[in-house]
Image (cartoon, each protein chain N blue to C red):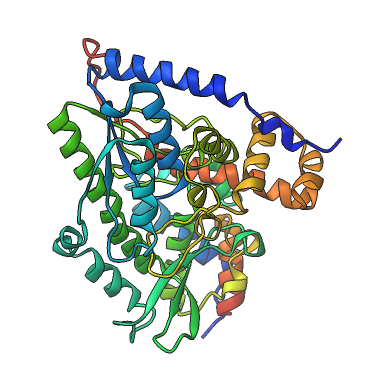
Length: 87
Length: 326
């Protein structure tokens, strides 16, 4: 199996956000490097929903010590983290 | 220059007078009711509100309700009765455990706990905690259980389990509020809400539960000020000397481990500092933290304000009704 690339994860995470948090309104999708916490689009509950999504989609387990903004606080950060972990 | 604790000082007699005048105005003219219902938890906030209400309205116009339930501490009823006894107003005990059983409060909560600890059952105790400043910035909740043999275990809560535990537990606050409005309707009284400033600002309340009220007499007072006001008004010392607790989970749970990043005194000063534009470096030495940690508390305050904004929102209309003004 080829290594998972971050761009693929970014697309999947963005689609998940648009479908589940924005009722399909892609115009409001976050920029890939926008901080969820700073823009306020996704709060800590939303981040945990994203964690559950990537855990089930990519069969990974996010550890307690990995729940930090560097890994989770934007589409780009989350995708890079998932790609590294699943790769 | 280090920020002084003195910034939280108040002229408590003058403030009690001012709150009293506002209570009389709001209840008579805004609510057009004849008195005030106060749910007594045995904690500092409801005790302080009961004392202020008695001072403002007279004991004949205050009605207290004691509503302990299965998970309440054994001390709760003794403490809450000491408040109605001290201030001399009428009160009633409402047994809410059977109501909560009817809602499936305990069953639904335990079902969610078993998503994490499948063997959870009779003889076990539980609570939810935040890691506080030691943890990450995402406010991820952990479930702590105590087994019948006394051993403690802790696990991160997956979101569905966390949401269901909170949703089930919220039956408690909403059931209590239903009883408060029953007695308020019966007596033609208004209902008080008893959040202090930390709770009100940071959204530490249940929408439609303890967040629902006609008047919130101490929502502008920092918790430190609520303690001082309570002492000033003669609230029983056992209550004034007790650490804040949620009294909601079967394992004893401090408010600072469930919700706030710091104990209330330090949290008060950080919130005051943030509200008054004080640099973290000036708050840090007074509260015994580094400037970076205070900066982190400031960010947590903003994050909680954003996350809980929904709790304080009035119902949102999607068309104008200019004839009705609230």
